[in-house]
Length: 229
Image (cartoon, rainbow, N blue to C red; front, side):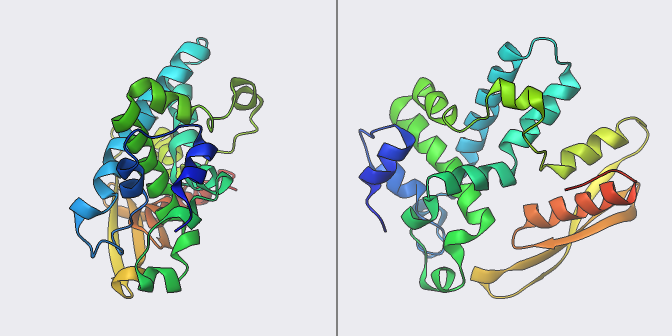
């Protein structure tokens, strides 16, 4: 694994307890699948810190945008696609500790692994330096208000898009289910479908459940006649 001091420079934060950062960079395949040795619990915490940071940023900076618009903007910033892009900006993949199987099958460039590690890194900064330090680090990556207003930020969270379409009819209900998983533990492949009132309206696949659900939602949005990327 590359030098963590180098990663600290890239994110603009020096840890008092670097063990937090090391844990954030430890994938479950390296820790033998044990949660207490991997970054999975940190990922959970980091997601919450990211959500409140971005919510506060949008709420205070875009005072004329209604709740629905803020929700869509937040989704575009905190979705897996955005986190993957944030991670790539700092070459996060080269700092992650991976098991041999995951290493051999391209884990360092896998979207879900990089996005999860970025969230875990947020939690590590939060635990080491508090909310202010975490927010400062996050804002190094969040697009500027000008970019958000200009539409240069592409929406990648199709689940949110689909939900907003369906909300126009309150009696309608959206749900997701994983219908297939295959492959070895370190190289799983998932197939998911999205249902509207129990009827399948989209299907997708990916290397994580989240990715498969996003692809299913994307297909549903496309079949409804909306433009997708």
